[in-house]
Amino acid sequence: MDIPFVSFRPMERELDKDLREAFNRVYERSWYIDGVEDKCFEDSFAKYCDSKYCIGTGNGLDALMLPLKAFGVGEGDEVIVPSNTFIATALAVTYAGAKPVLVEPDKDTYCINPLLIENAITNKTRAIMPVHLYGQPCDMDPIMDMAKKHHLYIIEDCAQSHGARYKGKIIGSFGDAAGFSFYPGKNLGALGDAGATVTSDKAIADKIRALRNYGSDYKYHHIFKGNNSRLDELQAAFLSVKLEHLNRMNAERCRIAGRYLNEIDNPLITLPVVPDYADPVWHIFAIRCARRDQLEKHLANLGIGTNKHYPIPIHMQECYRDLGYNEGSFPIAEEISKTELSLPMYYGMSDDEIGYVIEAINGFTL
Image (cartoon, rainbow, N blue to C red; front, side):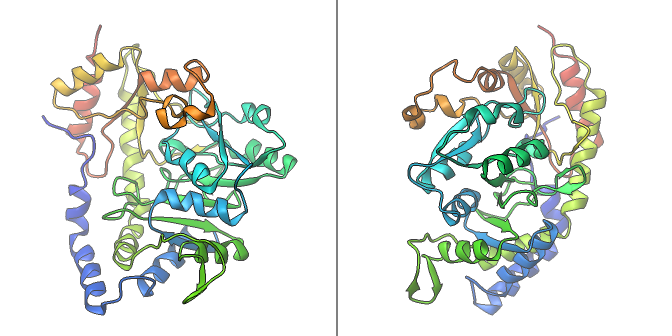
């Protein structure tokens, strides 16, 4: 049996008619930027995220960078980010002109450890960027308390967690703003690059809206040195179709994850932990294994696709040598990078396919 790490085909077959109608609607209208489809999706997604405003962007990186710029975070400032995350989190801080300061994750949840944040705060710290990694919500209460105590902004990185909840409240609605990616592989994915920022602060929403459009509040009038990062009409139309099905498709991911959690039984495998406060949406099902490469090969030989998130931690990437970190600076992130393996997780996996993955993992030996 061949099982890819991810497949869009089951979802695309199911939504084919609606997606084609969305394309035709945009094509017939011949309006491709800043139109009714963008406005419709922004209104719907803001409501979904329990926020007042949504501003579509060209990608998830800009959805994180633009709110930092809108809050005035820039040169000489520091922003706290987790040491275990995709590099876009740190790049957003860099592109805003500030310095990313790394903090270790909790080994069980992979998300930033709130107990370690305060030691990283300096008089240059302006914001905290918690990442709801792999679809798992961060422990937000202590993070929010920390931000309030030190008068810091919170920009949530929700790129992997569309629809996840913390203590019953949807992520993206806790901080001053939140950034989402709609990269095709996300739980809510476009058919190309796309992103969005949500916030309930009108002044910030208006500023982000201008910043994404060359810093312009109206045509040929530029009040900021902005960017070109707009959500195009076609992607907005596709996203509106998929948003209607997001909760149902997230529920299917949770069903798959439930089988993995309940049926994988191998002492060589460490499963993810779901705290009582969390309702994850399982963008990624990340296990750990000390013999990760052997496990990867074992599964590949059985036709099972996997991935590694993320094999080189941010502080060991060549582009961030200037931060002054070395190997050993963040041992938890380094251990995760050496032992994490992501299992197939996508809408449309059959029970036989799920069972085959479980059987293969349970059969792994040294």
